[in-house]
Image (cartoon, rainbow, N blue to C red; front, side):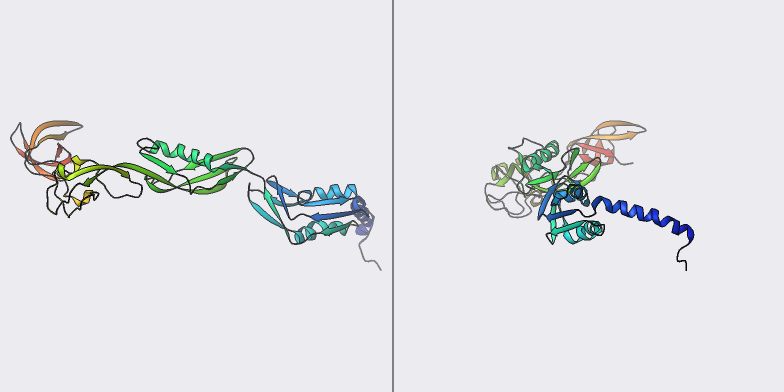
Amino acid sequence: MQFFPLKFTAKIPLILGMVLLLWAGTWGQKAEVVFKKSAEVDPGTVYLSQVAKIKGDAKLVQQLSNLAVGQANYPGRSTRLSVNTIESFYLRPLNSQGAEISIVGMGSIEVKARARYLSQKELAEKLLAQVSPQMQGKKGHDWDIDIRRLPSKIALPLQDVQIVVELPGRFSGQGQETAVLQVLQNQKVLSRHNLSFVIKKWGTVVKAKRPIQRQQIVRAEDLKVERVELTNNRRRIVQNTADVVGRTALRTIGRNMQIYDNWLERPYLVRNGDPVQLNVAVGTGIISIAALAKQNGYEGQVIEVLNESSRQVVRAKITKAGEAWVIN
C-alpha cells in the first residue's frame, strides 16, 4: 500500500535532512535563562540578552542572546514583557529542536527605554523664548513667569531630537496659561506635553482716595494711584487718573477701592462744540475738512457735525477722538 505519491516520497530524505540540519545547531546543548526583574535598554528592539542572564553552551547562548523578544520605542517610557510569552514563542521551539533550556523567573519584566532629560530649568528657557516677544514691559518688573507647575523633567531621545513649544492661539499674557511642547525625531512626533504656567503682572491702578457717591462727578483730588499685582485681575481696570476725572460714578465707590471702567459713565469721544476732522471718501482718495461737533458722541455713534467751510450740517460717524467720517 502506498501512502504518499512517488514524487513526494522522493523528497522525504531532503526534508529530513533539512530538519536534521536545523537541529544540529542546538541538539544536545544546554543553557539556563535567568530573567531579570527590570532592564534599561536603548530605544528599539529588545533582545533576550538585555532582559535575562544566559549561561551554558556557547553556541546556544549566542543564539539565545540574539533573539528579539519585544519593542521599547519611546524614550523614558516603560513596557512589560511576559516571561510566559517569551518562553512559549521563542524558547519552547528551541527545546523541541533538541536543546535543553531551563528557565528561572516568572511574571513579567519591566523594560525602560533609555533617554536623556530636559530639566525644568531648560524647559522654562524654551518657554520664555516664546513668551517674551508677546509681552510688554520689563521682565521682573512689569511681568514674570511662574514655572512651578511645569514638569520636573521631560524624556528625550538620545539623538536627532527636535523640540517645539507652541503658545495657545488665545494667549492673554496674564494669569493661568497652557502651552504645548512636542518632542520629534526624524519629523515624527514621539510625545506631546501640556505646559501649565502662570504669568504674573504688575502695574498702576487708580483707587478712590475718599468715598465717591453715586452720580458724583469724579475730581482729581478724589483719586490716588498705586502699583499692585494684576495677575488675577482680568476686568477692565483704570490705570490713569486722566481716564477717570470728569466722569460720573454709576455706583458708590468706597475709600481705597480700586476703580473699574464699568463703574463710571462711558466717556464721550467727542463733545458738543469740539473741533473735529471730518473725512470724506471721494473715489479712491480722502478729503479732510475742519468741522465742529454739534452733539456729544461715543465711538461708533453717528452725530451731527458742522462743516466750517460750507456751513452745512452733515451726519458723520465718530471713529476716534476728534475724528469722524461723513455718512453717505
